[in-house]
Image 1 (cartoon, rainbow, N blue to C red):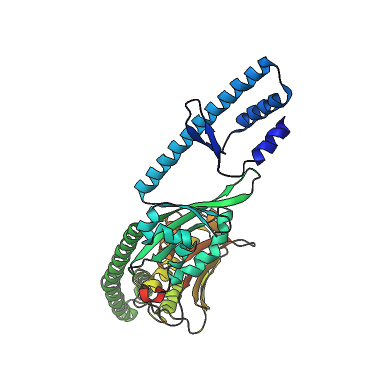
Image 2 (cartoon, rainbow, N blue to C red; image 1 turned 120 degrees about the vertical axis):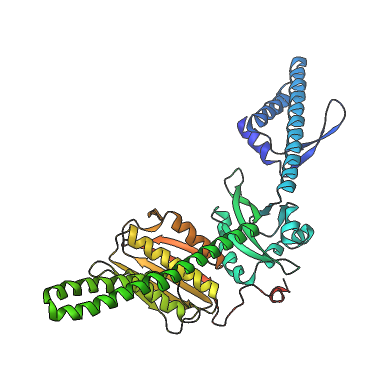
Length: 424
């Protein structure tokens, strides 16, 4: 009986089976999404129809069939109501709900939000399943293309920019989830894309305010406390020279005080440089990274080194700032939380990508390390720079914080020129 039920279930190949006529004479679409108990009932009725010829059996068959039709009608009506509710929800919230076949060759469904976000007709997407991809910003397209295969595993979660037909740029947060059939095989991909342009703008403004405040504090530290410490150290050195004749023991003690002042001046300058790197354009980023490493070194306890390939330069001030702040946060987090003996900052050009790695040999490797708010800040900066941050554990212990951003050797504009994608 169960075998016959399975055979009957497999015989339903379309999403809607032929109409069934109810007691009122109306026609009702029958959904193929019928639960196992209903298929079991159908199999029982099928057996009765083959084996039973007595009047009582025929009455039982008729009653069973009527119950089945009533169940199917109710299920169909509930499905239609559910679909209508989903349609209303999809239209109200403005996000883009989409459903494709596994090979991304056919758009099975896309919500009206696509026209609002992408600025392109839904009909155009149904005609060309890659219409959404053609709108992706050239600098993000390769990264997104490499991540699309992860849609089948549920690991697809991307943020990228699109260029609308009017040339405006939008930020998109796109996620996908595999849909499996009864055999457990992925046969469709469902997803949701949201316009996060407003959120990105707020994040950008917050970071710009933070950078501005850090620059102000750095300048105040350099022009205020540093200069005062220098004046005190100069006065102490003059006094030491006078005491070297009149009171040599006091001169020795004052010399120690002067040495402590010199050390305080050096630390204040490093802190000032960390808060306000003077010029990160061109080779300024490499210089500032070396200053960061010098300020992190602790004799006999921690060695911080910078390895930069020859000729690496960044012509975009915003990108250089983001990379410096990411390196700064990663170095400070490692030094404070992981008790490393060695930290290495690496900056290199790899084809059209600029790659920054911060490697340490500390404990609690990978994302198990409690970065706190610092990790979120680094991820935000990486996204604003058009890259993606990765934190991974090393086999021998320690952590690598890595970011790769598109930065061709020729200086690209900060925002895309719409004419570059006029063919999409």
